[in-house]
Image (cartoon, rainbow, N blue to C red; front, side, top):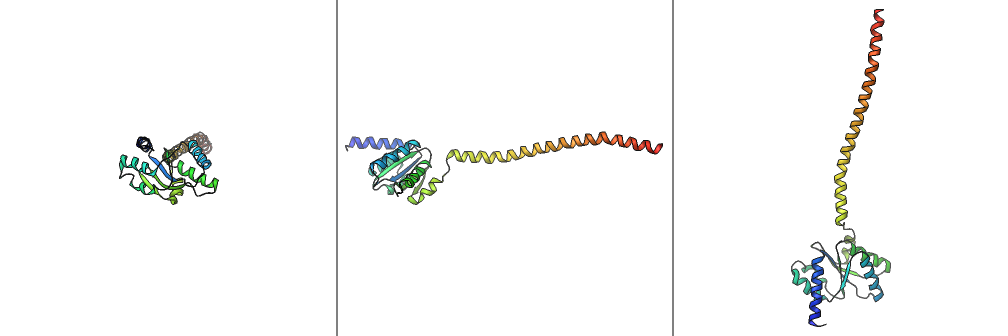
Length: 191
């Protein structure tokens, strides 16, 4: 690989790191070409970009952007590395988990994940990452929580309105019956 080609790869990686707030560093060593193809298709179907690059080029790209911000990722740059970029922080973890279950293998192995500025190191973090709620799920939860009290207030007001209407109808019925009874009682003692 020439120096110009290396610089092109570094620039491409820098673009990806700035474009996405979430990326996963995985170990795809010992996966066959067919398995890598299946993994790439799974990534494509979930809008996850998968890139394979040399560890030194990945490190240079990260260092040129912000050496301190990505410092926790450097130790995971060893062996064969595949990067997974995604807008949704959960999708790469779901893909890795599903791929493992399907093939009954332990690869691809999660080396590190960079999620909105936080670094998750090690394969033991995979289960936690599959349970992360996406932005859309969190917004839905908040809206549901906000709507719940409003629905209760509305239901109480409607229920109160129904009770008031029932009371008014009952009062009108009592009022029309009461004078008839009272007038009969008044007439009876005089006669």
